[in-house]
Length: 235
Image 1 (cartoon, rainbow, N blue to C red):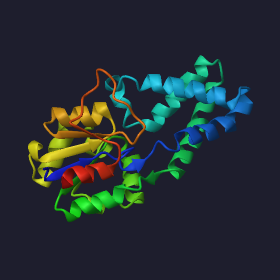
Image 2 (tube, rainbow, N blue to C red; image 1 turned 90 degrees about the vertical axis):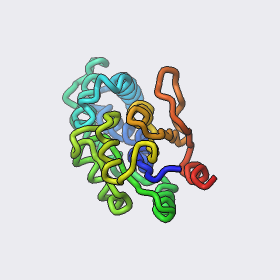
Image 3 (cartoon, rainbow, N blue to C red; image 1 turned 180 degrees about the vertical axis):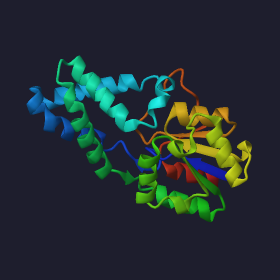
C-alpha cells in the first residue's frame, strides 16, 4: 500500500471536459453569422483540427504552458482550412475560454476522497501540467492547496509530466520513495507514462469517457471513479 498518492488536476479531480462542447458552441454561435457558416460546421472544423494538433503530445509539449496561444493558433488553422477570416480566432478563443472557466466544477468524489486519504495517513501531492497563472487560479478557486503536501504546476516548476523531475520533486517533499507512491491521472502519455518511467505505481482514471488504445502506456490499475481507488486501498 502506498504512503503517498499524487493526483493530476484536470479531468482527474476537476471536471474540465464537461463544458467543452457547450463552450465551443457558444463561441461558434457568436461568430458564425459574421463568418457566413453554420455554427456546428465551424465547431466540427475546430474540434477536428484541435484533435489533430494534440494527437502527438510529445511533439507539442512546448505549447502546454501557452494553452491560450495554442487555442488561438488551432482556431486560426481551422478557419484558414475552411477558407474563413482568421482574424476571428482571438475573439473565439476568448469567448470559449471564459465559457469553459464558468463551467469548471470539481468531480463529486474529489474532496471526499482527498479527506479520506488524509484521514488514513497518506501524504498527498497535486501534479498538473499547464500555464502557471491558469493552473494556480484553479487551485486557488477551489481551495485545493491546503489539501496537499506538495503542489507542482508545470508553469511554476519549469518541468511538466511526463518528465521524471516533477515526480522526483513530489517524492522529495513528501519524503517517500517511488515504490511507496501512486500517481492517479487521466492522461496515458503524461500521467501513466510519466509515473511508470519515474518508478511510481500508475493508476489511470477514465471517468467513463476514455478508452485504452494500442501503443499507449499501460497503467498498473484502472479506475472509473475515485470511489474505486478508496476501495482498492481498503482491501
